[in-house]
Length: 435
Image (tube, rainbow, N blue to C red; front, side, top):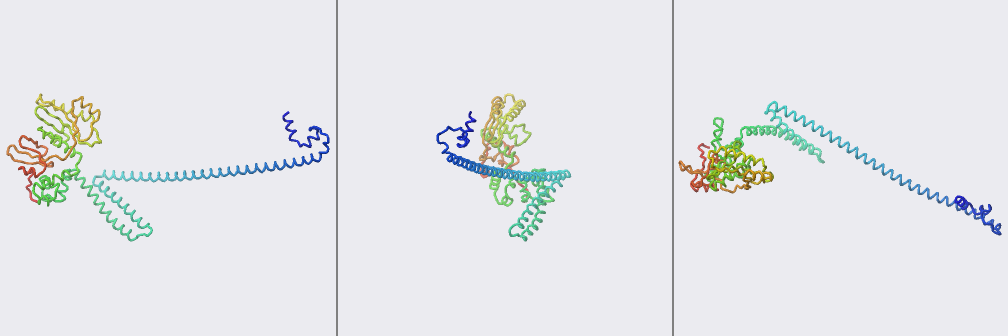
């Protein structure tokens, strides 16, 4: 029914009337010309309507097609750009990989060559190192030459001069570096040479091919390590000894020297309170059984381990275990059974871990943090009880750590050499040789 109605509506009015599908109306024949005109107008309207709709559809299609083409072109452009970037990145990575591979091969070659030279002997190895150092400087000079030639206004004369000077410098550097390695070898095998380097090079001690140079150095006043020969001769003993002490305190110290300085400071604190102190760490080194100081007073003995470590480090329980063990061994070996042996651990700055503190509490170890300072009297003024001779010792003197200060005998620590000499003490060292 609906399909029939739809067909009916779409047919022209005139056709519907003629086929009797419209209601008959009297005088309808008179309207025949009008109906025909209507049919023509309707047909014309349909034509233009269809034409308009076609134009609209074409325009929409053209717009959509243009947009689609633009999207497609944009996609192709982005795809091409990404592909180019990928290829460039790939080429860059390949070049970087190749460069690093060659660098590694070169390093391997150089290291193998170095090992081979040192297998031949230390002398040939040091010569090889000196030559490599010179080659590095050569590369730096060649880079300077290239910059001089490649700049906007090339400096050919300057580049030529750099080449000439560089060749001479390279030869001198190679020789210098070899001598430096040679000197370090001597100092490594004979450590006292480093300690007396300035004394030897400045000829503060008489040395020569006809002399016993080792004995001359051994007999030299240690003060000469810190002041020049001229100053040594010009100044009084108090003045030159004080200058040497100040220079010694300013001098950069090794880790071992820092540790010994801290042990001496703790020993000074104990001696100031009437304790008798043995400086085991300074005198016996690694053979001290972990007993840096042994302090005795009455029937009490304290076994002390002192560490002047940086604050970034930490005192661990293993350090406390070592101290407990060595204190127990000391007590077992002690010939006087009623002596009370206590273990003390001193730290200059490094904190104790929680585990270390727990272990110390359980084992009866006393833990102390005592900051180090150089601002204390460190000149030992000692009286020979046999001869009553008054002698003072500076921290770098040979017998310094063997001297025990007993205040009840009139011995003391002095702040300056002038103070010591003002109270009738003389320096322990006496130099008898000529300059």
